[in-house]
Image 1 (cartoon, rainbow, N blue to C red):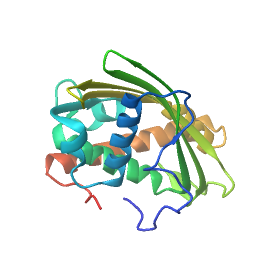
Image 2 (cartoon, one colour):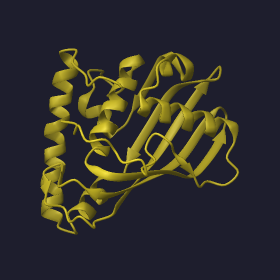
Image 3 (cartoon, rainbow, N blue to C red):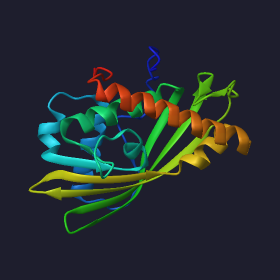
Image 4 (cartoon, helix red, strand yellow):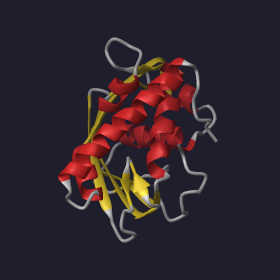
Length: 201
């Protein structure tokens, strides 16, 4: 469940810091799209995404009702919003950065980095996380555009290393946390099948 506590103002989730050098207009468009998706900006789907948009990644395959494991259309943006808010609310501060990008053939490949600190006590079943713990997760994203809008996105996070870092190097605890995340995703899949989602602000 998402905490009711707000993310502190010095976080940058929903407002990505660009560290990549000489980024182009497509990268800026893509970053704006996903920042607005995270923020739940009204009209975000119509402005940035095609009606047949789909996204695929390890997490989508755990909750998807589709044979290829993708999430599709406007509900996929809702799911992105829900999953990322659920993660971010576990931390007092989260800094989002684009550290590298490449544009070619209406495709943007980018490496993203999120640095989380000031834990609120637990994450994916990992309890009593030290208050001074700072952890980083990296992800690779591939966004494809058609007629000026995103029609396909693939992502993959370094989730296992993230959990190992949260657990302070305890591999067994990290493995259990991965299993706990699986349980959480099953709950999300069930909720989606029943037409239930967390409301966008």
